[in-house]
Length: 108
Length: 123
Image 1 (tube, each protein chain N blue to C red):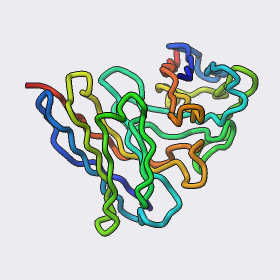
Image 2: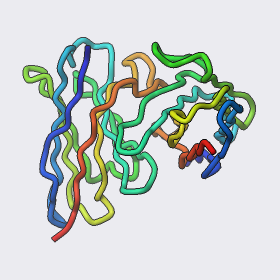
Image 3: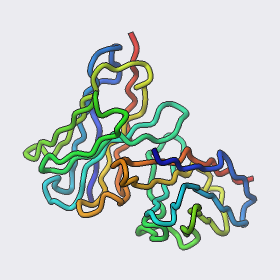
Image 4: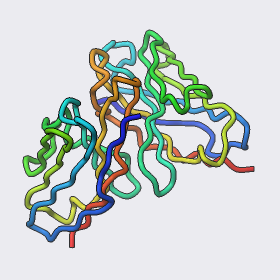
């Protein structure tokens, strides 16, 4: 089965740039979606189809996907960005939705 | 504005069947634009996809849960439901219903989520 690998944690100071990766075999050939989940809340999509921002998501949040790594980038990080972030793809070989294990973003 | 709300028992005995319903308001399940999904999250752990269903009854299920899983849609009530049989403590989780993916693309995202409901499996 397809596996997505995310670092368990990323820490960044306010105002800096946070980069969170999602690794998978030839993930660049798949569509990657990213979700933000704050404590006690349901997940919310922040990037769909590698780089599309849903309405209401600030331009500070962006995505890219190439080769074996997809990346979620948050520029000018704010305290309110502190959350868990999950990547998601569809594995067409097994008709299965796959999530990464999640990355906890800590704002120092 | 579309809103999703899960409902069902918060406690299920081991070996019994877990049943949940998702009520959709502000939009029609039968519009044909989306699949309707179930996901879960064990306490302190990551997200797991359970499955999704189209209003016509077409389903896609997590291969690891497929043998215990059934889902259904009630277009007249604008609801969809989940049944998971032979539950164990490993099925304890917050269960979410969600909208998505788009009906024309199973590669798509889950763009709207319910608030989630905690189901505990315990005797």
